[in-house]
Image (cartoon, rainbow over the protein chains, first blue to last red):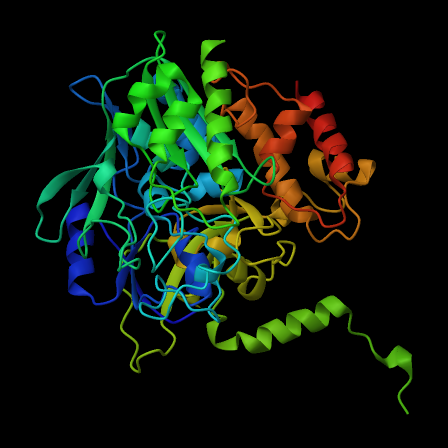
Length: 316
Length: 220
């Protein structure tokens, strides 16, 4: 690990200002992904700003009947919150499907959103990777790509976003609240937080340098059957091959977002009109632009079958 | 020629001496009461040189003050600086759970957190749960049910298991809880899911389940 200086921030504005002031600074909250990458020298910040003391660890009601989830609420606490369990079950289920008990105790709302891909070529510093070292190439294209993206990928990168939580938040139309180094705050729809790789896979979000996530807000509950179904190589503690976050209403209408298939949670609102007609039509529209590799083409079938199982469960 | 009996070092002694000599500059271990600090660590004189920072926390009921390289993980601080070698380094990447300790009542991977991030915290390691003479019920149950083979993952398994029972008691649901809105109940399925962050390469899983189940039952 490269050496770094360290400070504890006392307010979100102070943290953002410190990040803008110090070149190569990073925020650290749970640290479970960042430290893993720092040990491998994939991340090499020269300064860490510890945000754990900031008062961003509460789940609070919003004036319009929704919930405001503090950036530092631990994944365990968010999944266990009674309001989340009752009104946003898909979020609780997605959180519980991710990582291990130890990691959920450390991981935070904002950190979970900003975790980086688990593409094995991103992790292997002996391999080219445009995300790790822009311009070096992509070893996953033509390599072992069973776990990789089937849609929205580019010639530069076919990595997936690994979060389960973010997929549920996408289905819930969450909004990300931030503060910038100049003190300005803004709200980013979660659909606009994560980027597709394009020519710059190293730029993963639309956050500016030093911009700090302070909360994620959920609109008022939409009811329905809320299901998160994750398919993976082990029964527990593994990343998704495919996951489905769904909210299905009594009349068969609803929302669906997919995990494990793209560089961001994958949702196409227009495809949801097909939900009452079933999984085949919905997935056909949702993944119409899919360009799988020979090794991950199975994800298209798996996504359809997983959604079919979810819709059956929703009717039950 | 030396006789074999002249060697009086145990493997553990040698490991401790080795660790101490490696980390001598970072060995300012005292037992002063801790004071919360929020200082910015000074810039290194030479770019890339180690940056030292003070941190105070409580380990197994005793206040500790350390000056460590900012890169020091909680795991390395416990093992190398404080010599709580019960906590094990397995993968050092949060995948195996051998380094599990309990901080502020929560189990975490001590390999994926920095010592300096724990100023003012209370840490419980396997040494803080019980002693060979006065074992924690979970330790006694692991012995009784032979919940290990090589033993390397065992301190992490036991710390994790103790915290799992607390998590169920606190009503925290899991991936296998059938009803999200109801308080979770202990079951083998719940235990296996909740312990999935602790790997045992000897595959003592069924005996671990027996041990934890006995402790869970005796609490009910």
